[in-house]
Image 1 (cartoon, rainbow, N blue to C red):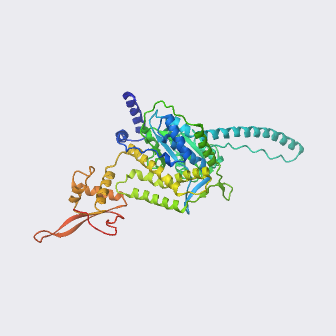
Image 2: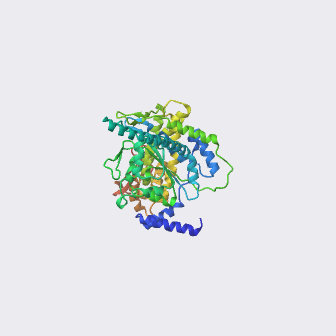
Image 3: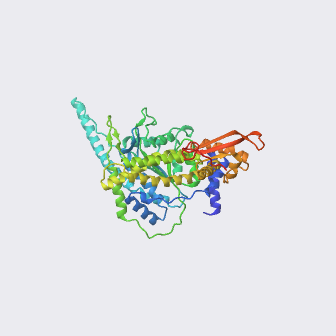
Length: 519
């Protein structure tokens, strides 16, 4: 991009952010942080089903783009193929479906569009078949309706009851692009299995929320927040008395967004919509002509896998509505799942864990289960295996989750930058680990011992910072008190002493063996 073009893009984006209520400092932070992002991790194609792995690798080589551009759309699509037919049971009262909200973050010209179009071909082909079937049924309905009008007129002449009218066919869907919430609700009402929503530009998707509401505000954003967890939703229809009631709306979302407009997706930054997204944010790569091609066999195998997942039938509740079948975890898979979820919580509680990441990390438990369900059911339908989530499925899901965690860090650092207190907390934790989990001594000694570029310039200012680190972290204990001591010569006096410890470490203040790491 030429320098003058970049300056224009920055100016236009800055005006957009400021119109959304962002301050000049926040606008500047996006650009200041863009060159200070954590390194991206490579997408783990080996964690995908073998058919998907092959498609992702062949398409990436052919298109000359990062493999996650294909993989993220494909995994989301396969989750939508499962839809409301299955949920994984974690314990009584907690089960998860296969819905993902996913976004690729990349600059214009990085081949996001041709990549995702390869991935969503199974949905495109099924949508075309459903459209053709509907047209045939609609033509037949129109013929039956004409016959009904004749029969009704004859019945009136003969003084007998008219026959029942023909039933209009439902328009079945699997793929939706540009739509309003009201239209989407109608689609979901006749497609309880769920649909796959694809938006090439997620920023436009976000801007379209509530665009028909007075003042630009309404319930669209709330719908997407609820749909992520398949929670009950009721959508009012314009000019109608009765709302569309959706007991278990299932929607998977995939799209792309440019780094410079990520703040638009955040919007009302405390409502958690951004936290619900899995991100792929790779570095740009050089793209040249490639003679590599995607084989027809590879495309066919993925379509076959998609169709097999679509063939999974749902159960039925007491009212005759579709009810997802609960898929159990094996004992080994459940043990591994518990280990990984506990590790997620420990990570969130660790000193220095960024406060901004606690929102997305809180959703990672659910995503671990959802990814295990998608990976597991791909294995089940491909191999005609017992319908159960196995240890290998949870392990594959955890590998994928590690990728998404790393890229969430890139996104959030790009948006909000590094927090000095969080970085200081990491350095404090490293010092305590070095000293066996705890430290006790005078503040000035701790200041000298702490090797950190993020500590304040004066020792007396460190107390407030360490207190804030402890407030943010459930794993850090910090106590400051005065203790009496006797000076040389017998004079009694007091001195300030700090005690710090990492909970559950062997030598921490709450551990098995209390000790001192002071100097």
